[in-house]
Image (cartoon, rainbow, N blue to C red):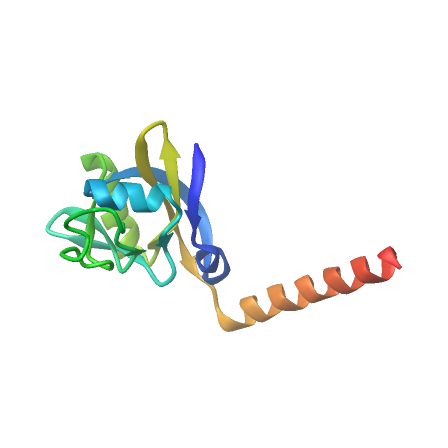
Length: 146
């Protein structure tokens, strides 16, 4: 599968314990725009409503050469295609205090898929520890290089 867009912030903000891949309902112009690399998952999340999962707040820039490009909202909610068991599992995880966040947009042959991560939000001190560790590794690599 080809990576089209990645949510780097999700792996920083959440401790991902499990992943699953879901299909997504898109219009033709949105598919062309995503394949051209004009999509962003920054600030997006998975919302569960009426027994269905939706990708909310993901930005897909309207495709320039489409006739109806101006009619579509770039941050509209898009339905995720999951099996009933997967949706029930997401509902159970949500009640257990876990969150579902989109990690990446993938291309599987001609289809666009969303990689969904299930995990718990990190605390501020966990994030600080990660930043400190990254800075130390960068500094040691810099010393080793010269």
